[in-house]
Image (cartoon, rainbow over all chains, first blue to last red; front, side):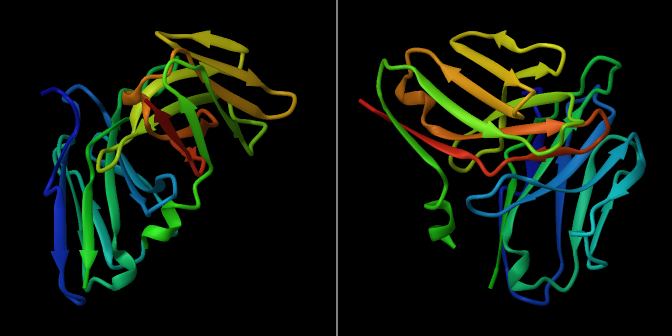
Length: 115
Length: 111
């Protein structure tokens, strides 16, 4: 499978615990994005990387959230001290930036439930 | 909770009919538009895109129309099939990193 993969697919945790999600992008893609999606809404941008550099963070990304892409390949998103409001689907997407267009391809998502 | 999802605009069509899903975008500076399909429990799947210098683009069974004057985008699906049942999102991009998604339309296909 050459698409974007995410792990785990589902995570249930108790409030106050830390969680970490992983995303493996399409191998030749240089941009990687994290989004959050709640029921009935479109994905909301959280942050993105160009290669290993994190170039933009949304104001939705509180200081409890941190993302890394250490070698410009896979990325991790960590949420510390989880709150019930963090319950959502966390989507990763990757793209290959070109002068013509940039289409983002999404992974299956990690669904987080904070109890 | 689950009730939020039930408030999505909904389109119900008979199998074999054509579907038209509409979207109003917000930024007149947006120059690239994408339609995504999202099935339950899955990530959004790219369907078709269009740049602002075009007003129509066709794919396999799908056509996207762009009206920049009124900032309107539509997705037409020909001969709708049960497998087309999903939530459809339009997205706009101003040429930078940020892609903004609309709220989505749920398509039901009746057999």
